[in-house]
Amino acid sequence: MLFTINDLGFSIAGLLLEGWLAFAARCVCALALLFIGWVVSRWMQKNLFPRLLKRSWHFAFTHPLLESFARPAARIAWYTGMYLALRSLPWAIPGLPALLLKAYRMMLVFLIGTGFYHASGIAALLLASFSEEVRTNRTLLTLLDKVYKVAVVVLCGATIAQESGLPVGSVVASAGLIGLTISLAAQDMAKNFFSGVVILLDKPFSIGDWITVGDVEGEVVDINFRSTKVRAVDNSIYILTNSTVSSATINNATLRNRRLYRFTLGVTYDTTRPQLEKLMADLDALLKASPDTYEDTAFVRMTGFGDSSINLMVSAYLRTADLGVFLRMQNDLNLNIMDVMKADGVDFAFPSTTVYLAKEN
Image: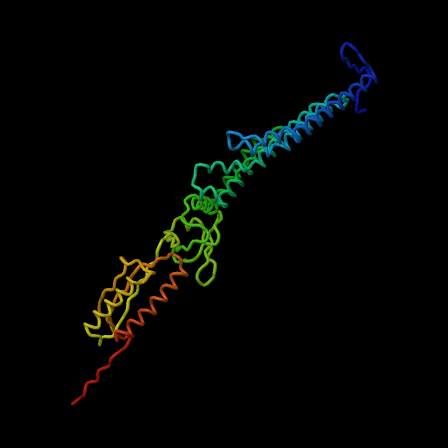
């Protein structure tokens, strides 16, 4: 039999019941406890937690904790009533009360762990003192969310294992040896992971920035915990490990507030000095009058004599950091320089070779 009926006693308010009457009284008490647990569960879910969530709390983590614990707390009340109801029955199975207590405690740990698991939003509060860019970084928030959830699952699983009687100490020791072996075999992965965290916190670049890392130049299209993806000018994708990126010199072109327009202009050697001086003055005036340049940065200087040309340096900073806008401004300036060259009667030089023939006597 599952229940003990013979020699069963039940006393309430001085009234002593025995046998089947006592068993019936125990069943009524079990149903009452079960009903109370259900009522408390419904009250917590429909009234208590909605009222608490409507209040304003001093600590920022209070609201997400209340929101995540609303359902687990209601289930704890329901399972508590169920446990007390089962314990009130006269079970004839040896060791069943202890088994029920162990199952109840494991269920409590599981429900509390569930509440903390769904409160992963509080992990983002660790970044409250950082800048807005860091606080709104999706990749970093995802990292914190995953680390938080893994920690909750591990702690919850270890506690349940401890309650179930498993040798947690031996398991932890074995896991430590296995973890040491894995860590030795996965040093590169760990290095890339922590380098990715450093990149996310230090913010040397963001998605959409135009960067140069070593021989790779292009737009950053993705940053994860192992690698950074860069789309080059030819539309190909370079996948750079984070350890390589963090140890290299990074040139972030997006952070500059202007772009340099500079090139060497070669004119032919038959250009006279007056023509050259007028050309330099006209080009200088052109650059300084352009709305696309910073006037105080524009200059034109003769830099030397090439193999087949007189070299002039034309330089100015343009009022843009965007590559597309810069190319348009550069195009307009180049065409205007061609007009000035034509108006001044000066020709562009091109590589040429002169051969001198000596006449033999």
